[in-house]
Amino acid sequence: MTRPPLKKKVAVPLVLAVLFGLAWYVLSRLMPELPAGATDQQRMTRAANEWAVTVAQIAFWMSVALVAVRALNELTFFIFRKRKGYDAPALMRDLFSLVLFVTAGAAILKYTLDLSFAALLPGSALLGIVLGLALQDTLGNLFSGISLHADKPFQLGDVITVGKHTGVVSSITWRAVKIKTFSNHIVLVGNTSIAKESIEVCPQNGQNARIVFFSAAYTDSPVKVIHEVREAVREAENVLRYITPVVRVRGLGESGVDYEVKYWLSDYTRYNDTDALIRQRIWYAFRRNGFTFPFPTRTVLMEEVAAQNGGGRDAETLAGLLSAVDIFSPLTPEELNALALASKNHVFAPGETIIRAGDDGDSMFVVSRGGVDVRVDSNGAPRTINRLGEGAFFGEMALFTGEPRTANVVASEETEVLEIGHDAMRGLFRTNPDLVEALSHAINERRAGLLANASVSAGEEDTHDGLLSKIKRFFGLD
Image 1 (cartoon, helix red, strand yellow):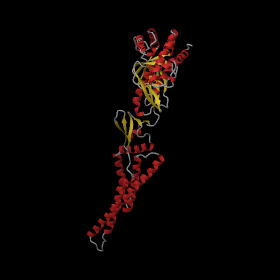
Image 2: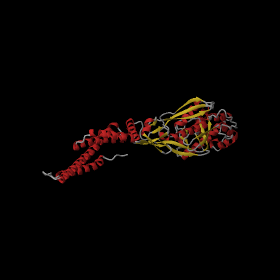
Image 3: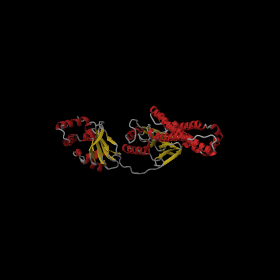
Image 4: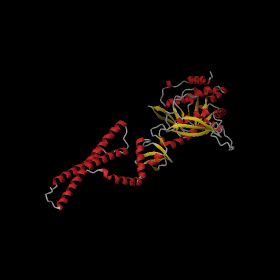
């Protein structure tokens, strides 16, 4: 909350000081002299005038003291802010002003009324006992609040756990700490309760970590599981990019190997959503790599397992999908079936990267379900240059010539792709060497069409002989 400027703080007490000063001066000047042999009425009038002058005097000095205390408060905490780099807590400022003003008030009463506080001590002690018993909880919260402001165990915006309550600190007062839970509820926790409880603090600008647990079958290689899950998690939203997630084995369970993935968050207040996203990425990584989530060992699972290649689709369906790819037009139905059986099916979550620009590769992909975005870097920011749907393909030059990937391809929705690898094509070339030349013609015609659409000069494209030589050299057919 923004504090009012100093001139607004002292304006009212300064005006009051002027008014009380004028009243003090006027009453002092107008006070009548008490003649010798004055009557009782004259003495009473004189006494009343003296009390009016005294009250005006006290009011004047109290107003002056208030102006001085507020100015001194502002100066003191201005220096504090310059040295420490942050504002002092409001409670500290209020206590500072209260002590100064009480001290100034005592001095003013001593000066004007010659009032000694020693005579009030017996009565004030009794009053203090009564007030202490009546305000026990309030005073406990007050002093606990002073301790919190002094120690600063947490700040506004931090996520804390106190007892059964977890949420974001929205305010800290002399009485309680206000927490906004992740159910959007407001919880007030008394400072006395916080002083007695153990507090878990997750600073808003700190490197806060979370741990998510999962399991894999004993038949899955721990090295592969750890690598694939780490790569799937590190690109998830709200995960710090500069700290690599840690995936490790935490135990050997009854049904499978138990793992944990430790990652660091950019915004800890969103940890519930991020935990859910991490579990989702783990599921997709398992599906993509053929890993298995273990079932309880006491359960007998009986089902007919579909073919893993193609995600359960039969070879005829996949061959039909490949027949729509123009560069495979020279292949016979038998060769398309063989290629379909040797291909692998992968599933990607929305936003996951399928291939990255600059990476080496020896396979191409056909979109069997969903869609992908083709992106390039433009002035340091990704720019989508094309969107491919079902039946489209990409990465063919890496499959046939081993050239590095030229663009990033990212799943725009949940997407299944069929990956055709180097070994599958090499098997076809060995059984039918004439396919090399036929496929090089088809690839060259496709590239020529793409270059023409992109208005690229013919001198920049590969000739048929050059492409044929690259394919033969890459597959060892020379």
